[in-house]
Amino acid sequence: MPLKGFGSNYRLRGGMAIRNGQVVAYYQELSSDTVKLVIIGQPKGRVQEMEIIDQNVVTLWGYQAWHAV
Image (cartoon, rainbow, N blue to C red; front, side, top):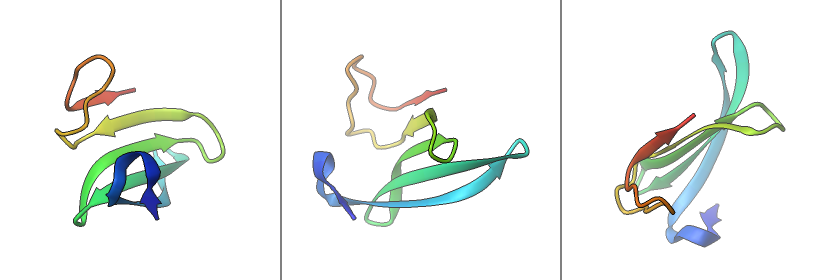
């Protein structure tokens, strides 16, 4: 699925995993089969963690690659 805010060069995939004994949902943004952004949280819950790997993504704070928990 293309992401509207990131243009047509990215696609989104998601899944479930076990982390510290808890089920978490994750979504990965990919460009050319390379993961650029990861969002992790409880299924149908809040975002718990986000990792921006793509150095071309700039945040409001000016960081280009960051990890937020």
